[in-house]
Length: 382
Image: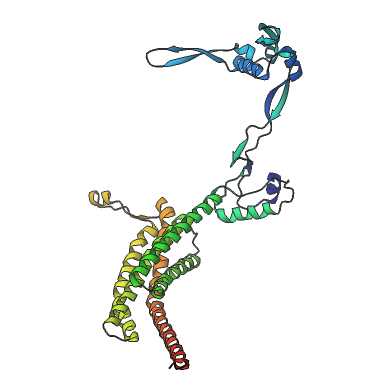
């Protein structure tokens, strides 16, 4: 897979590396179990003796005023680093086949020492062995575009053996998890908004009209990002959309609630809608404008040093910085979404309110007409 991807020379991939190392040297001690059983010694005893000789065995501890230190006993360095010396390691044990007689048998009597190579380490994820191919993305390239290209080419690789799967991890996997979390947060927010709106208006129609503004705000975000060619940040753009859901709903509540109040005062449907739009247009525009203007400095990275402004009369104003990369997508999301949704709200919400009431009145007339026809066709009873 690594050689295949390297041969494609995918633009943006800096250097593809693998965390799998197959050439780690290893000394394998293979025990002849049949010979060991004839001697009356188990593999556990052999492994314990070898470990004690090479790594040491704690026999006591030394304690002073501050701490205690383990006392380890093991072979000298020249012996434990010499394979021939380890072959002559005397395995001391009590042979129960001979009445508990203490015996000593050299390791070479029932074990062979071989030089091999093995894996430097075995990594697992969810109890499955994994091998990771990783690379940095060169500057000037979009990470998502490069990752999508790598995944597309990996899917075309035909030499994958059975039982092996290829998945994209790293930042792409984190983005997917973040999107799932933000979608869950948006669902919870919408559920709470729907619950509050139905409780307040006691009407599914008015609730649907107000919730449609969330769709308008998302359309405005996508249009703004597409027109200005901005990159979408999964985290901050998602947080901005969740925040927009609460802001734009408030504007719809102002219009719908005031329209209902005017109708209760005796205004007809058309006059109530027109008057509500005229009266509520000012607070809606003012609050939206104040929010947008407040987000502009955060979106463009407007920085000012207040300390030097008062001490040296030099505010050191500059634009940009690290904060823009983090807070910029959030601020632009609110600016685009709120700006688009505010003007659409002032036009479409009154129209949808009019259509909703007209549809409701038409349905009521149909129901009353059907009821009258049913009453006329009933037979007379004596």
